[in-house]
Length: 233
Picture 1 (cartoon, rainbow, N blue to C red):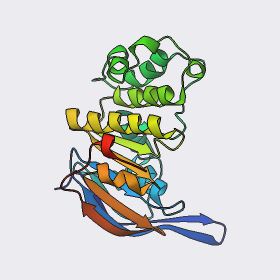
Picture 2: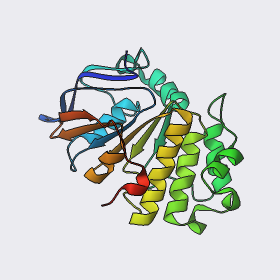
Picture 3: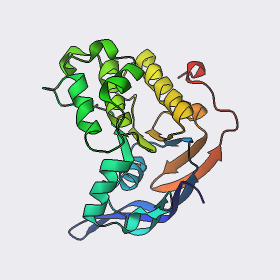
């Protein structure tokens, strides 16, 4: 059985009498330890897919199975526990708490789970051992994103969900962040899902899911994913 399985997933948003079909009959699988890039233009349904997989939204039809568990059948309380203990999130705009230091931002996440990685250790791991006492406003965009990744990794998750993780960064810094994600996946066997509109990122992935207008257009497997250093866009 695949680590992640989407089975005919549909999502309809309703506002009064208006219905918007955000996802329709979406089916694909991701194996444990893979880097999966979900690529598509704005409005294609990428973020909806990620939010449902991360337990931040619910589906209208179909099923999502994660490691043998039907997360689409969870109630509100169960989804909250799932988000807290099993998933790491990395967002485009970091979402750091401005009046806490880098160390304190990571410690908040490490306090949520029993088998957390110590905050100091994970900040060293992402190259920020010398910046632990700095506040977000004292860090560059790339450093803030590294803190956000450290915060996610501190929970020691099996699944890391990344929503346009390089969208707010310049080219060189974006590549550094992608290399960090790729290295973490290869070293720990963690499954990483990255959603992006940048098709160049597909070359680094083990699996590529292309979405358009709420449907999956194709699912392909890269036999030889490129190291991030070789990506160009």
